[in-house]
Image (spheres, rainbow, N blue to C red):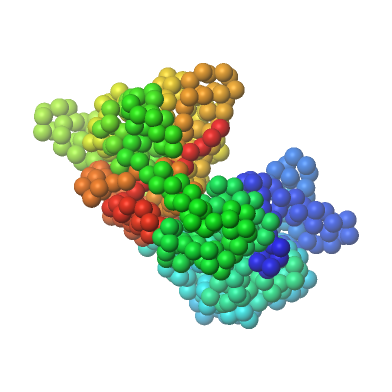
Length: 632
């Protein structure tokens, strides 16, 4: 059944951590088998965010279970060019930081492309890299990640099936995606040395890992045609390749997205909704215009057999979509609407909006946020992290200049602030690329974002006592890489929840955040609610949790359980709220692969949701914000 769509075996783990553990155990088994035979184990290794968890699991196996790497020889896929070996962003530094410094691998067994060579020596060096792999007996197991454009290693779309290790030019989309590791895209190298596709295909076994928002390119690589425009699709021609992905990255596989095409589909209400919505959008016909022929010709004949009448199915889905639209996110008072997404009572509700960064509230659900306040609910916002790494150094000196000028203007002793400004300027002028900020600089950057968040919350209509800053410790590393969720994070969140006892919670369900903060923040809320429920806190059973998406993507329309329409004036009001976050305008430090500003993304996304509803036959609104309920 599945084989007819998936041309590469796919193993699905519940979480990235589970997937990383699975791959680490497979690697450990191979290493031990080679050790028992007195042979070297030759591994091809990848870099980027995807394999970080894998390397953490390998280090854990070494330290806790005695896995030795003395017989391991490694060849890395790629390296930026040009880049100093010791630069923080180099893959040489990455590999030593995450793996090699923590295990007993012999330094002479580590092979990473040299990004410091003069250009005239690159061709000869690349030939030697290929020869070194061959002399080692070839790669026993090659680990890969995948880019959103399907690249493997730095083999961008269009790379030849017969390509070998070489110098390549990076696509702009790849440079934008990797800008998170640098101080802006201008600092990202334009070239790289990479193993070729032919080199990768020579490996005896290949495992490609993908987590999170890679579902579309995973499906295209596994189920689509083999094409050099999607380099990962060429892995269909490998004799022993497996994709290991998490549940989020599996969402676009046919067996999950359109299981009725794979056979054996259980026709739940949610599955019927998905099938009918997908068919309606595919045919560009309103739901109520779908015919029996449309169902039969698009793989839904089983649904007709089971339910009998196409128009009755149309009506069922139409009503489901219609009933998800409401202008009353906190519930409409003094009425009983059985199909309404939210309860009418209690009214007003105490609502708590969790915002992972200090601007996610207004970007992701600004219209809903304002509507809750306008409709009389007791609305609180909790900013989970300081967001201090997403402030440019220029903003520090700008605001320090203001502080000094303010004191001077009103004859306040400015000696202390002048000294702090002088020290800040001195520190920033000598700061190296990717060097972590000092505690003082981080504190100033955190203050900048806190002031912006306060101003936005006041703009929405909150009083100061309704604005809360949690400053969760996991975030405060001073670098892009964050700590895992800790007990202190959960304690702070539980204390907040117990103090407010909200009847309604909103939190970010967006797991596509480039540096993972949203995922950790969501896990902290989930774990806190589970513990409070287990502890018998009575208010928890009457609290509903709604998930919004962040700046990077939106819920699929068949998933949406509550859609809040916005008028043109409300769209503009939300835009002005986003503009208050001046430190995040113009040049967004961590924007992922999307070059648009956050307000532009939000407006396009919200308008897109409204357009999809209209395309399906609903009322046409200017914009819509979407939510899915988490049931715990």
